[in-house]
Amino acid sequence: MSEFFGEFFGTFVMILLGNGVVANVNLNKTKSFGSGWIVITTGWALAVFVAVLLTGDISGAHLNPAVTLGLAFSGLFEWGKVLPFILSQILGAMFGATTVYFFFKEHFKITDTPGIKKACFCTEPAIRNYKNNFFSEFIGTFVLIIAVLLIALPQLQYEYLGSEKMGLGSLGALPVSLVVFSIGLSLGGTTGYAINPARDLGPRIVHTLISFENKDDNDWKYSWIPIVGPIAGAGTAAMIYLFIRTVCA
Image (cartoon, rainbow, N blue to C red; front, side, top):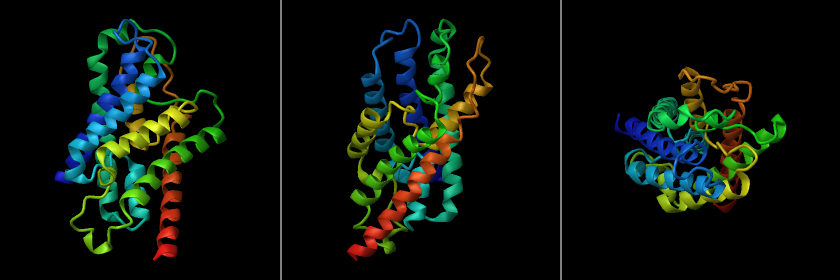
């Protein structure tokens, strides 16, 4: 149960700080209103850093169904724990998004620009082209998962799986946050770099449930992209990792 709580709490913290920086930059009359993309990408990288720092020793700090599935595809995580981990991550993301809403509630009230309130919860593409949007999420997640697998895990042997905590924490809080920072700066402008199904799905559910005046469209027709794209990217990263491990064995 401690592992599942670690995933819930770590994802909660990541969304609280990550979606919090989006709200801080985009909602009217905050003190950092309009401070831009660099602040958002920096805030998200630091959100990952804090979340991994807090929960790496508890659950391995997956904080992302793509990480959980990438490790499982690679034979480095028990399939029996996959569904509970993913459910914990989605619930943590929902709780984090709800907290962001109440934290910035007065600023949500005075923000009416279409799309801005929804952007504080979930992602949307800059240019809507589902093939290209899928490719963006696929590649961004591929970079994240291949970094975790190739940098942190090759030296670990199967016999250690019972005691080692596998996840973003295996890479280290600072290195993984730098990977996320790089993805955001270089690849994030096309779709908002969800690279995490729970990060998008959980807050999108919360946005759907919250009663806003003049609420933005929840855009469920797009919601499959930040779910399927990251999963495909994680699976491809796992295949390449297994190939490299076989060749180098």
